[in-house]
Image 1 (cartoon, rainbow, N blue to C red):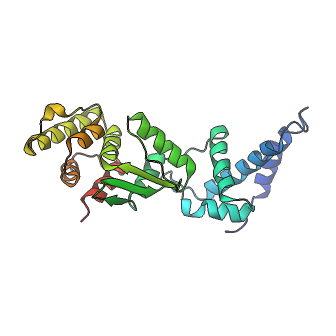
Image 2: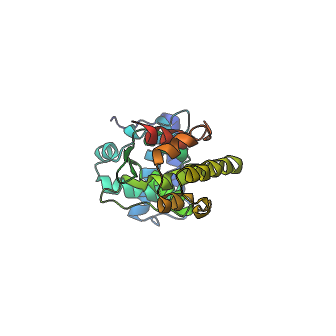
Image 3: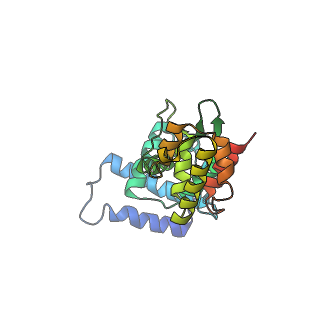
Length: 234
């Protein structure tokens, strides 16, 4: 990875940002950590702008913790900490749903444990996904490797339906209840407020469920399309 190169115009703009923190009757008020975060923000903004895809996702292979740590001469853990802190103070906008869809294409599904496992290279993306999942009443299983996200496939189905319109969600619920009846299960036991939990409690064939949802999920629901493909893969 080459050193990030700024144009003369960019350097002038960056100097103005730095000068504002020192030459406005505030010289010396910034702590070492404040200065480090400011410099990291200037660096990561440039790095992300050079590696942002047209669809609003970031090419994480070129913005990895390892490559940044080698470039800046700091540990990967410090890079992750700076990424999280910088996002809180200087948020960088990106399409996290499409980013998750891209990563889901390379996810692993264990048919025995019924768990989906995927690598989330960026800590801010991980936190964004975790927050959304928890808002749906589900949870992410913590791993020793902080980059690994592991989730029951049933909760993943709940997540993708939460991204659909209310009309599509209702269609999906009808399909699920119909599948329950065909499997000899009581559809009254199905709670459409907590789809993931209902699927786990009752026990269903996820491959069949995914196949039945395939024609309902919107093509624009990239996470759903990627998950359906993963669950129905031989």
